[in-house]
Image (tube, rainbow, N blue to C red; front, side):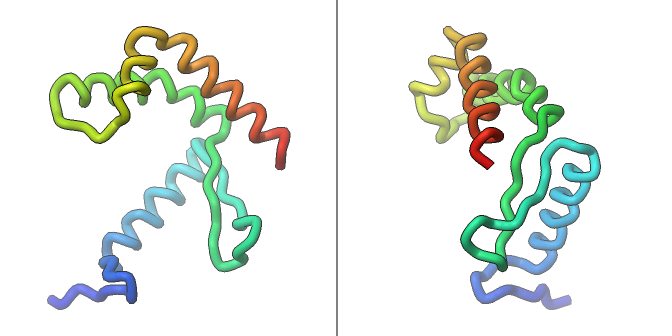
Length: 103
């Protein structure tokens, strides 16, 4: 069976799977979908507070992956996550709250 492709070479099946996952995350309240501020054809996704509460778990996953696999994560961020985890998470939450006020 031939797999369709978009003009950018992206598989239509992969695109449909990603769209389904994004919809499921939105339905679960992990993120919210909004129109893009300058391009009506696009949308942006923003974590909800519920989604942001997953940050400690995601930090642990990133650190686990960095210990066991090659990663493209910047070394400075990995060091901050490792040695100053609470500060890293606090800044993340502060930046998230600030961006909510800008909308």
